[in-house]
Length: 167
Image (cartoon, rainbow, N blue to C red; front, side, top):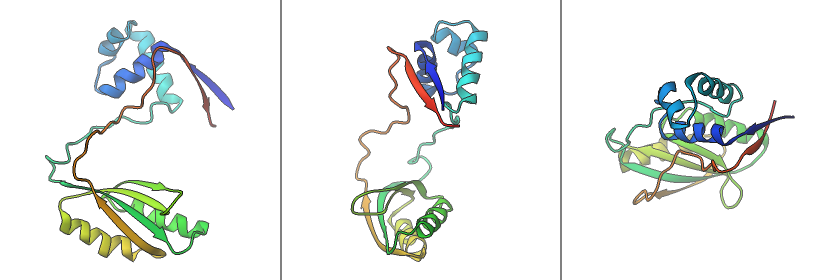
């Protein structure tokens, strides 16, 4: 088991990059009160250890014509490992599925999907999800209004973090 300690400067770097992944190293170094070379060394360490997983560009769904955000609860008729794996593999191939979470409770999986309109949601449920082998029931909930949406993890820069890195 590998341990890694993130000091306040590492956490400040992470917070700045979560806000704007397009910062140049010079801009980032200035914001966290480091010179560019040590800042770049720290960023590379954070990337190599997997703490920085990837850098992405977030698109505005409304501007892209994706108006409907929905949560879909899926229950399988059986839950052996092969059925769970098959469902997960099928869902990973659907571009409309933004998240798929294996759950405890009333359903087996909770999906977050985004589509253009209700007709496309109906098509996704009727022609795609319901055709996946082992699906017993599907329940959907449409989002009326997205109250908050965050992509930045809440990490506190006022203290150090001791992390366990799995090999």
